[in-house]
Amino acid sequence: MARERIYEDFSFLHRRVKKIKFLFIFIFLFLILSYWKIQILDHRKYWSLSEANRLREIAIPAPRGRLFDRQGVVLADNTAAFKACLLRENNPRWKESLGEMARLLQLDLTVLEERINRYASLPAFIPIVIKDNLSLEEIARIEVRKFEFPELFIDREPRRFYPFGEITAHVTGYLQEVSADELKSGEFRKKRMGDLIGKTGLERKYEAWLEGEDGKRMEIVDSLGRSHGEYSRIEPRAGRDLHLALDLDLQKKAYELLEGREGAIVALKPRTGEILALVSSPSFDPNLFVSRFSLKEWTELNSRNDNPLENRAIRGLYPPGSVFKLAVALGALQKGLISPQTMHYCSGEANFYGRSFACWQSGGHGWLNLAEAIKNSCNIYFYQVGRRLGIEDIARTARQLGLGSMTGIDIPGEKEGVVPDPEWKRRTQGADWFPGETISVSIGQGPIQVTPLQIAVYTAIIANRGQKIKPHLIMEKELLASEQNGPLDSADIDMNHFEAVIEGMWRSVNQGGTGHLAMVEGFDVCGKTGSSQIISREKAQKTGLKLKPHSWFTGFAPRNNPEIVVTVVVEFGGLGGASAAPLAKEIFSFYRNKSRSHD
Image 1 (cartoon, rainbow, N blue to C red):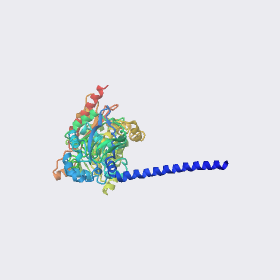
Image 2 (image 1 turned 120 degrees about the horizontal axis):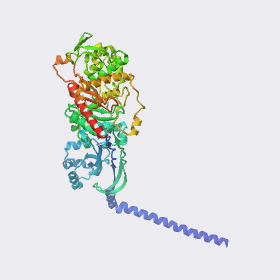
Image 3 (image 1 turned 180 degrees about the vertical axis):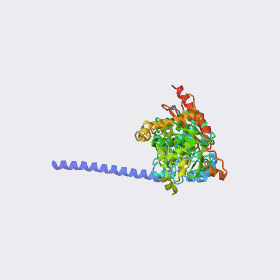
Image 4 (image 1 turned 90 degrees about the horizontal axis):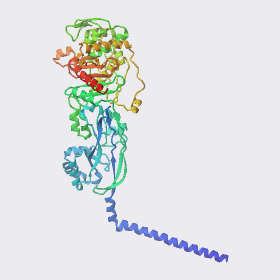
């Protein structure tokens, strides 16, 4: 019985194995036949289907963070725009249709070729932007003929827009295509050829804050590049906004005042360093750069004699002229060489080291104390004081007041200027310092060079009675905390000495001094004029050149608890009191009226 039972079990198992074996053979034969059908019998059908449906990856640019002024007015925004892109992999013979494509897009053929050649090294599956900011008419024209150009497609992107153009250009900066060198540097790892990045101003400084993170979508497209729906999508992450200290109304006023002139105006809050206005003239329209304009257009703009791309407020280097007399006065007071009552006689001319040095007032000012010397901007008084103080102490005081080094403003490209001394001359010229050079530097002439922003900071330190500041445009607490390296120290100058100098500045504006055209009734403006020579008197006589000096005014108001500093420079403007001071008055008056109306 047991043997029969074992035999039956074995027989049953054998039948099961046989059935499974036949099943596997059937499945295997089915797979072989299916493979043969797909690869041999229906090869052409399935090849066509695979060719007709591909996935195309398209980047979705992230909207950049916006820029706002202190009242919430948008200074840099994003608008929807459309661009024409070339996808070379969709048509291996795309080069043959370039001429017709140029006519369709209404582009010069050489311009089109220049744009494509710029990205020739990119893989063929990466789209190349060949025209952006398309009009509705251009979009319609391309859509009608899209079957003729499978390599051409239209894509949507956020486009940067600067509503106030030239007025805020040197603050906002502009966007431009990332260069090959920038990509190689590693600073822009997320970027690809053709992407726009901040090139100047706040756009450059805060690129990482503003840029956001691009998304992407996968589209199903046929062999003609036609879209057959979206396969997948990853949404972009928008960049973060920036809120500025800038007052657009004051910025507009400063821009209007400088229109037709070359120069700069800076207005800031002396207690906090908040920049209320920063204008460089002439300016440019930053919206031009977003359009990927040609190399020819860029060259024309960049080669203009009036240098509209140069931010004169932070990069323009000028002799400070008589506004530097305030530093000489403070240095001499601190060293105990003079007091506010120290008198010097001005006859209109004085001789030092065998050379004659003149005062701007040819008949002279007679006897003056310190406040009257500042009020009347007497050269002879400061020749005498500067000679006694010496170049090392003059330079030391100037540096205490923020000259000769960058202010640390939060836009790139700032220049540090020059505060000369014997060591500087040996290092840069390999020559010794001459005593006569100290006389020139004492009134802000000679090799000394400053930027308008440096003079605004210098004036703020005086208005603060020695407290230093760091000027800034942004108001984001997170960014300010990371960039402000602790509280700033004070200048090593006694507070009473600042009061003595401020008395002279107040008289200059309010008691008929050289700055009287900056006076604003009821606002207690304190200021100092300056006129910086472009060439020396001797050179002018030899060459016959008659160049007007650069015109300066810098000041603050009111005298006690100052609210605003205003610095103006007008290139070749002539006397500071006649040219720059009236512009400063307009800024002071505008600020006062606006701030009082909000009280």
